[in-house]
Image (cartoon, rainbow, N blue to C red; front, top):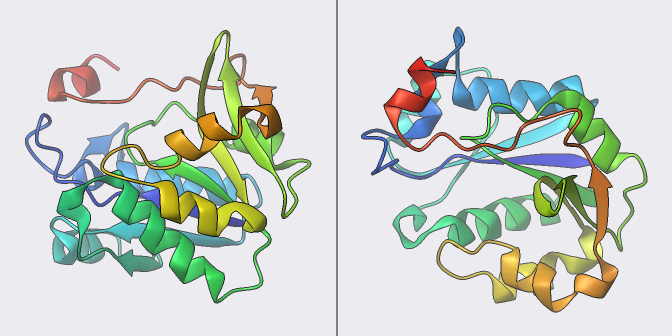
Length: 187
């Protein structure tokens, strides 16, 4: 099992890259990587783009993948991360977005518990599906091919809805994303 943190965006609505936002005493990028590590994921890659040098300098302890096409949207980050993982023995990847600090290690553990190369798993929050998202290796090429703009794996998961397993995690996590600075100060 490997982990991918998608953290390449410029955070236009936020006013700065969210990877560099401090939330409850740590950078969002460190928090997301720590959630994966805390769930037992041993290989964690962080995909960066906007302000990549600043992110590396602020959190030098993380392992990074550069996305030179970050401005085209989240899909390019997902493709870059999956391409980097293709050279590893990982059989599945659990994907987190940097701006969802309410996702917990417990929710990641629940979603990866039965992960396999053919898995498509999403965290369930009542009637909504969200992160963590587990993509088995058998699906990486298809996900990369279908990912466009800011859709990431969304279109692939919809096209394969009959194969997606939803693991209820709403009692373990919160999938609210931080879009504006006021959300951090009120968190």
